Amino acid sequence: MGTNGSDDIARLTAAPTSECGVERTLRVLDGKWSTLVIRELLSGPRRFGELRSALGDPSPKTLTERLRMLENQQILTRTVHAEVPPRVVYELTEQGRSLSGILHAMLVWGQEHPLVEESPAAPVRSRP
Amino acid sequence: MGTNGSDDIARLTAAPTSECGVERTLRVLDGKWSTLVIRELLSGPRRFGELRSALGDPSPKTLTERLRMLENQQILTRTVHAEVPPRVVYELTEQGRSLSGILHAMLVWGQEHPLVEESPAAPVRSRP
DNA sequence: GAATATGGTTTCCCAATGGGAACTAATGGG
DNA sequence: CCCATTAGTTCCCATTGGGAAACCATATTC
Image (cartoon, rainbow over all chains, first blue to last red):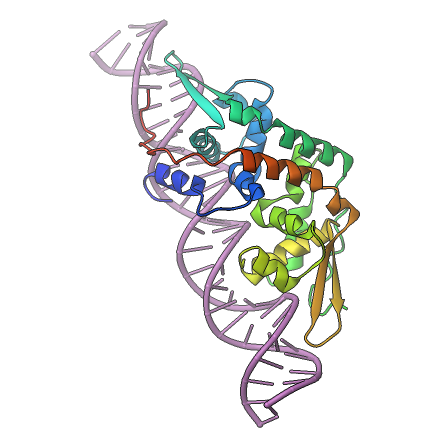
């Protein structure tokens, strides 16, 4: 990444061309952390530290990056309270809350489909 | 990646611990290609080359990797027809088809939420 | 007025991921 | 005999993402 992270985030959130709805959604739910942040915020506003521990301590860099991206896409808002110590609260926008249907479908599917035992993982070469 | 890709794929699909349904689903819909492969296969079986061109020509390495992962998770099946030229057909399993609800929710959301114009991306430092 | 405590962000560095191009295998056709 | 076709695989490199630790601003404390 370059010296200015904002440009990179803007590039990531820019749509290159017309694309189907699934792809557009994937631009928002990009990667594990984005989706989990939204899952967490669906139950209410959270502070940075609360998000971090609720998600299993991702590196602050990664979490900040994802939060900026989602803020850029107007999925959530970032509110700084000028207190000491500082308090930064993240909250879903209306657009962000509208993702709840997708998240709910994912939650149900995951609950109903226990993960398969990993196969013996035989060498891929020369299979019948 | 090591000399044997199967081990890596097995590692990627292995669940580390108990987790919520959303996380379990994310282990399957991991990244852009997995989801798009499933979207494509929801309208019927496809050959390797058909998938590749329908998805905008991802590198064969990446596509193979994702297909192996989804096969490992029993989301799709891989059938080799011993012909010349070879013909390999990928098809969703019952589990794979059961993801259609999630995909459909993503499609609808994406259609209803045009992407935001990217913000001026002002430096992040010292915002109010 | 310097020290401290606090929460969020950034920098540095390294590992993992993903893509491109070239190569392989098997066989039918010119 | 050489080429075309399909489905990969291998090698190498650019990009991305994570962890650790330093950084920043400021009210309170000494």
